[in-house]
Image 1 (cartoon, helix red, strand yellow):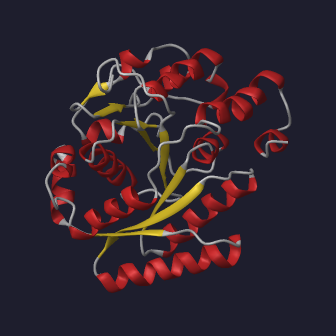
Image 2: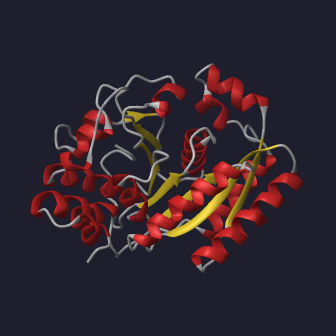
Length: 288
């Protein structure tokens, strides 16, 4: 557990790192964000919620014996799944090839997840690039949805669709976005303007850009050698723009919630209620 047996008096802030398009470096940035938050003094838990894929474990050269899906299903406890990476950073992976669906979530599983709030300041969720109900509700129940896009049109369009679907199910989550894999500052700023205009025009509200991350051969090399975590701990390892993005995240978006609905209560009222009572999908997901 983070910080030994220390019990926090607040619930953890949950950041869902998300994208409507695969291959945009979402998992890479989830690892970077979690590592840098830990370095900034926040006890941080990174959870791989991209069930069955296991990119977080692969990139950090780990082989989890217990996955997040087993915690949600009530089959394992927090301490059985946590992999420690220092005094303030822990990771819970997913088992490669594991199949998981919303119907497998139960009360015991959510009770297991509520333990997270007692031990961590921040939970970073690496979510899948889908619009299935479970993923949408994981994002909608978070405190911050951090969308990862690139300058490519499919990545912009698919991430917009994901945010649109979250709004359609009644999600009130605060949002922000990061442009990844840009080749220049001009490209980064142009993409920020393009995506910001799209969201403002069609969703009727603006979401802030936290910045952009430039293409860096060190990141690709570290990913291939499964040494990504080591690179995140090097000052400037992800480039100057990435450090600026983290500074913006810490100064403008990180807070420690005390009240409000935690993500686990959100899942209980949507996914779990739907499974147990058999309500109509659209009514349940909309919170009716």
